[in-house]
Amino acid sequence: MSVFDLSVTDALLSTTRAVRKRLDLERAVPDEIIRDCLELSMQAPTGSNKQGWRWIVVTDAGKRESLAEIYRKGADTYLQDGYQEAKAAGAAQDVRVYESARYLSDRLEEVPVHVIPCIEMHADPADNPELWWPSLMGSILPAVWSFQLALRARGLGSTLTTLHLNCAEEAAALLGIPDNIKQVGLLPVAYTKGTDFKPAKRRPLDEALHWNGW
Ligand SMILES: Cc1cc2nc3c(=O)[nH]c(=O)nc-3n(C[C@H](O)[C@H](O)[C@H](O)COP(=O)(O)O)c2cc1C
Image (cartoon, rainbow, N blue to C red; front, side):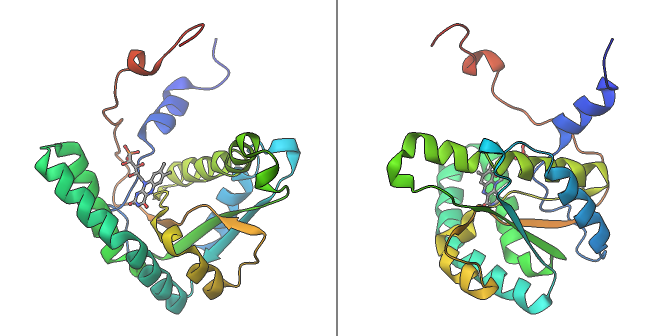
């Protein structure tokens, strides 16, 4: 017997996509929904239970415009090169991802809510980098994914993006983020146009699975 209705939980886990072209740029997002989803996301685990999450929610149109410019500065070359390489290699799925990423990049300011997840840095990375990076990212990315799942369950969508981090200091200056707070991405959030997302084609499990050793 299952604890939860697996048809519901498995559908949520397998159909929460990186949504870009199907973000509804016309529909306003109530602040309360963002708050509810963030509240849920903070049930995620953190190393030593430090709970160092910080969320910067940006709805101000001027700041979204500035963030979009920063994002494009960080993204343009990467997206252009990636698109050309995928096309030359005949990698159809990658071509679609780059086209979709370009679509989002071109109109990021129009997405009604930008959420920048951040994590407070406690220890010095030089002390033990092997442990530091997994602990730091592992203390924020589970919460980010929970946030995305909670959005999906309510008819909203997002994509975890990282390309603005090429110009992270500019975003930090714009938003007044202190030096000990690390940004880990930018999530454009909106209602989705329709909710009928499907599981993605992924490589077979057995290509990635090692049981009792490599
Ligand atoms: C660490 C990470 C960084 C990402 N950065 C970006 C980004 O900067 N811009 C973007 O449009 N998508 C970004 N993505 C989204 C991926 O392109 C997306 O998850 C992938 O294509 C799979 O899409 P799917 O989950 O809908 O199948 C990122 C995803 C991850 C996990």
